[in-house]
Image (tube, rainbow, N blue to C red; front, side):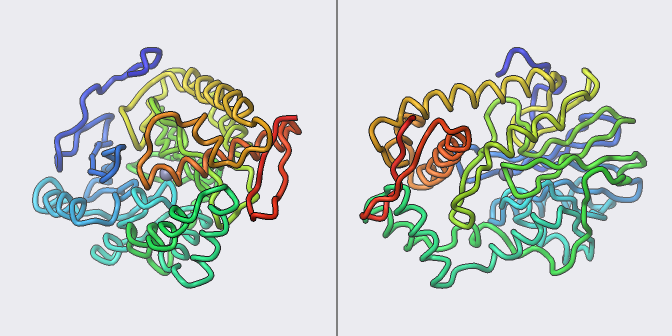
Length: 341
Ligand SMILES: [Zn+2]
């Protein structure tokens, strides 16, 4: 637990039992099949139904919990609308299942709706070539590259394609939820256009994955945009959440609801300073990203984590390249190598 933050609701809800965290706002937890084993969803009371924020990953375990929720706490008050903070499978994975089931709209940023809808259907030869090329350039060997090809589109296995139409969340507009005004505040770097939602009336910020209390959000470069600098986007986005009242209750997608937003923003920025120092240290004479990854992630990584770690390592390298502190060359073996200047 991060001791510098306040945790007004220190115990998560039992499975399929929404827990009130603020007037008219309920916390629901769904399982995840990863080391990070849960996601927090939020139900906002609309009187005769609920707005749901985020949906859970598309697998049988999450669907089973949803069936319990529908047969129990939500039996007489159905879902009326879905809001997704961003496109990742644990957030938007079941929007395409819940939406048609209740005939209700999906609200999301245009970028994340479109990215999810596209990526859910990817899997052709050019997609696999793009994946393989990215990890080859990062310095992965033939065995890992065969794994990349063999696993195909893992994203597509964790989402139901979101509905073909949606309602667009725009930064700075006003959205009415639970009788209050909420303002979407967009963030970048974790997903294309991640939407947090802030209610000044309630002093509540639904922060999605953009701001988490304990872990640092994944900020990675992915094969679709191999030259991106998402860490620059992420760090500059953090500034957009400053200046909210000190007693704002932050509702994150992982971990516990917390207070102390400014302190957490400082910690997240500082965390990346330390990671950037590690990255610079890993850039010994012309090292590939796969080698630098071992400096940044010294613990053993499984076959899923290592590819996320590669994306994060490349993100730190690109940030340092942007600052002119690291240079990159492309070698005849098809691998990028990096060196501190
Ligand atoms: Zn995410």
